[in-house]
Amino acid sequence: MINKRLLIKNLLAHNNENSFYDKKLRIQLSEKEGKAKFLKHVCALSNSNPKNNSFIVIGVKDEDNQITGVDFFDDSKIQNLINAYLKNPPVVSYENIAFPHLPPDKVVGLVTIHPTNTEVCMLKKNIWKYPKSAVFLRDGSMSMPKNETIELKDYNSKLVAAIESHSQNNMEYTLDGVFDFMKARKKYKPNYKVFQEYFVVCWAGKEKRVKNNTYYSRVDIELINEQVRLFYSEFDEVSIEMTENEFIITEFISLGYDGTHKYYPFEKMRIQFKNNVSYEMGYELLFEPPTFAPSVTDFLIKKNEALLTKLNNNITLAHKEKNWLKELPTTYLICYLNGVTSALDKLNEAKPILKKHSAEIYKLYKDTMRVIRKIRYN
Image 1 (cartoon, one colour):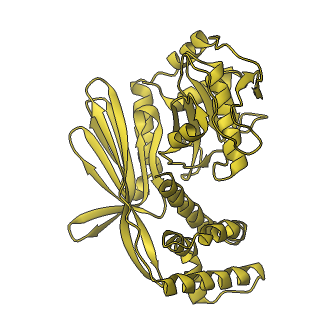
Image 2 (cartoon, rainbow, N blue to C red; image 1 turned 180 degrees about the vertical axis):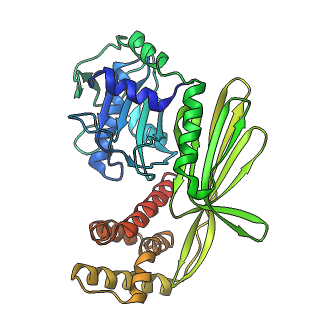
Image 3 (cartoon, rainbow, N blue to C red; image 1 turned 120 degrees about the vertical axis):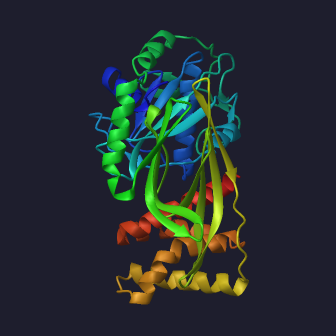
């Protein structure tokens, strides 16, 4: 099993960007240009590596390889994006890799593009300035368009195999990972469980008991063997279930207004550990959007616009308005879920205002956008 943190270190230490490896400070999948550039790199790396894995490392400065990290990105539907825009799409995974020196809310993103072997990957419809049927290949560190017919060639299999071989996990890495997790999360009662005598899952969170049920907020869950962060949230609440061979996370989201909120089941992630030293992850969207009357959504839109106007004009908010502001991202979400399509545009327009005003509010905005992205993909 590959230790993904060690794999990233080996990629950064021994290779400049090349035909099987790229690095980015960040990617912007919420914007059409960012989405198009990401698809271009996936297409180019897939065509340049028909028989071996290729990688994009996200959260690293290009000039000096400094690991700065990015926000946790738990989009289980990224393959849907690949399939929607690429013909002969590769299998692509996005994993969040924990590094001890980064803040708790930061990780390094690792995109793995698995080999396709035979078929040329290309765009199957227009996106941004890239036309339908565009084909890309890696030319050194660049993803370049190729107009001529290309033949897939294997140049990197031995080199990639050697890098992956030197990134294999061992007992020392696993124990170090457990100790690092326990030390960093000691404030939130860290726990661990071993599955199939091999896999180690660690989790921590602020515990709350409601009747006979236990819920966690400020949750951090990691598969230590691979140094992969499975779940992270500062705001949502989750329940955790375990069987002999499964670790199950059910995420709830809080929706409401004027201080009256209700938790709704949102998504279930199920990790099944097998006795052949492998595991599978499955996702199930549970969300049933709540219904609000048009009079309520009209009121919420007007209230949010008034708050943003005050922020734009540097007018101090009253205590009650500060509480309303914390609800602004999710109340726009309520409006969007109830057919007010303009609410999503208004939320996007509010982004720079919220980012400038408060780190806490901006985190709530990003969490709301994550929920919207998952709902749209489904």
